[in-house]
Structures are given as structure tokens and as C-alpha cells.
Length: 482
Image 1 (cartoon, one colour):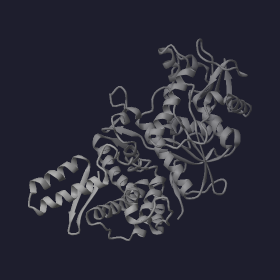
Image 2 (cartoon, one colour; image 1 turned 30 degrees about the vertical axis):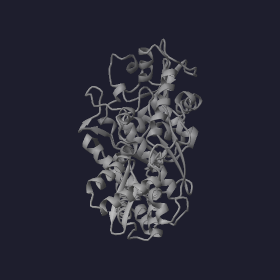
Image 3 (cartoon, rainbow, N blue to C red; image 1 turned 120 degrees about the horizontal axis):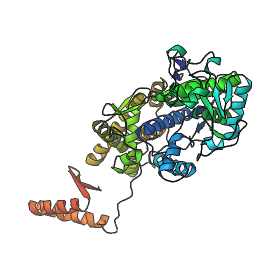
Image 4 (tube, rainbow, N blue to C red; image 1 turned 90 degrees about the vertical axis):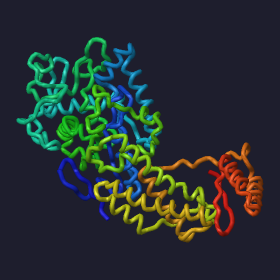
């Protein structure tokens, strides 16, 4: 079973081969920390979290790096509005990022480099580009000479003659920055300091780095010249990732990444998410409304990661129902292990055919929706057996096989980051004891023998109000706490 991935760079699905045997170097372009994370961030972070988990599951040692862009015009603008500083704003939203991701069950990356902590690497890379003829200074700024890099456009598939400059660098003859450029397609590597803005000393004067050079430097500093996977949202393909390639490969002469993976965007009721449209939802707003974080994960994983996904009330309701099904399966062992005579802490072999089918499915370009199908099959079967056990006192499947099914579900769900919290034991200190419940059942039985059905129903209702459900069968009456 070979893992194959769709590579944005080559526009085809390819077998996955790593630079170093059994090791994966993976970089994800993280967030610009000027606001709370929204649904688009949730999708990206969940997707790449699960990609990392899956690679580890199939035996790779993964070094996973995710950056923070902590210097940017948006951060500076927010700092001005709040009469604060760039550092204070960035620190606040980095803290909020970790809070939100913890609620979604996102495992922390191995390292979170920040642009402001990578100045030496950034300046070193700019200096090398200048020495190789790919960059030129201009009145305190430094620009990348796009036409010097013959392969520019190979990631996005764009040709220079068909391209416009990036949104923040549109051609404008009146713009002083444009006037400094030798070519309208050139982009800034270093920006001269402006009054009231943070600045760092450099060979070109005080200033700050451009956005694109930051990631090139952080990848190189943390992972080396060539990495296995460079991941990010599809909106970053151009110009950000295109520019990263131009910067890094012009210096090293080596591929920056062998596989470029991009997740699709999130729409809300069919429209692009936008504050101006009033459909902009942050992660914490969504979760504070009572949506289960695991339902959010499930919602994200029900779509192929490269395709757009539409967030609607109906979609999140369906994901919530789906999560309830999987959750029932995940809790099966904790609810019924004593009755079945096996301990949840005792390891049991997984079902090899089920694991193989899961892996074979997901190996097709991280087909997580297909993997979920395997989980639902296991969960529904465990739920069915649980209902039989409650109503008939025994199961159709042997306890040993059920333990295998349950542990297989727990393991595979964990690969997708789906975990059910073990619910606390009912507080019996203020409720009926087991002996008291048995006594009530005996009283009810006596009432039924006497054909006093009103009293029998009263006792049943009283027990139900106490959270006790009775199940009558030919073998007698059993009960369980709700």
C-alpha cells in the first residue's frame, strides 16, 4: 500500500518518497496573528494536524514546523487602533491561537518559529540573493528581480506576461514603492523603516522584512534546504508560495519542497467568508455557541481536503449527528467492559483487515472521508451490540471480538483526532444506592403481581426521574443509570 499525494507543483498524484528514509520534514504556513482564528484557519489546522497524525501512524518520524507571521501591516494597523504595540497584539493572538486549537484537539507542532525571531536568517538569505544577482537595493528597500528566476510561475502555472503584481503591490505609477522597482513584477524582500513602525538594523538600513522572505528563512533555518511537504491554504499558492520557491531555490539550487499540498477554502452558505458580508465566524464564537469541537473536526474531514467546503447550519448539524454515532462507539468499552469481562486498559490486537482497508483508503491522497466510512461501520456495529446488551443482557458477537472492534475504532479515530471524553460516573451520593434501586424494583414487582399497575407505573416513573431506566424482559427486570 503506497501513499500517493496530489502535488500542486507537478499537477498530478505521485508516490510519496521522503528525502530521508522514514522521516518527514513538514512545514505549514501558519497564521498572521492580528485577530482571532476563523473557520478557514480551523479547516487548515485540522487537515494538517490529521496529515501529520496519519504519517506517524504509518510509521514516519515527522518533524512538523508551523510559523507565526508576527510582523505585518495588519498587525501594525491593529496596534495603532488599540494604541498598543505590534508585539503586544501578536502575543495576545498567539495565546488565543493556542487556546482555540487546544479546544479543537490540535496537537502542537514541534516548533513555532516567529518572523521577528528569525531576523538573522532573513537578512542572510536576502544578502545571498543580492550576491547572486536575484535582488537589488533601492533607497533602503530591497527587491527580488522576478525575471532573473527562469522558473517563476511553475507552482501556480502563471506566465509573467499574463500576471499582475500581488494585491498589495499592484502597478501604480504614482506609488513611491513602484517607482523604486526595476520591474513591476518585482516584490519586496526588505522594507525601509517608516516613522512610528518597529524596525531592525540591516546592511540596507533600518527596516523590516517582506512577508514572503520570512517563510523561506524559517523553512531553511528549521528544516534545511529541501523539505518533504510544504502545506498551506490554496489562497497561498500565488504569490506567497510562488515567491518562496523563487527566493529559496535561487540561493540553494535545490527544490524547496518535493511535495506542495494545499487545502481548499471554506465558504459560508455558498459565499466567500467575509466580515463585510456578515458571515465571518471565529472558532471561539462557533464553539461558544455549543457546537462540539469533535463535530467541527468531523465536518472538516467529511470533505476531500483539496476541495472547497461549504459551512452551513445543515452541514454542522449532520456532522454533530455523525459525531454522536462515533462517540457512542468510542464510549462502548467504558460503558460495557465490566459486563463483557474485559478491561479497557488491556491491550487487544486490532482487526487487521479493517486497519488495512482504512490505510488503503487514506493512502489515496489522504482520503479522510473514506477513512471515516470505516469508522462509522465500526461505531454503528458497536452501538447495535450495546443496545442488544442493554435489552437482552448479552451480545451477538463474542466479547473478545467486540474488544478488538472497539480498540480498532479507538485507534483509527485517534488517527483522525476524534476522541470522546469519558463521562464522569453518576454522583450516587445524592441519589439512590444500588440496594435502594433493587428494593424499588422488588416493590414494583409486587405491585404488578397484585395487578396494581398504577403503583407499578408510579415506581417506574419515580426511578426514571432519578435517572434510572428499567428494561423488562422474560428473564426479569434489569436497570441502568442514564
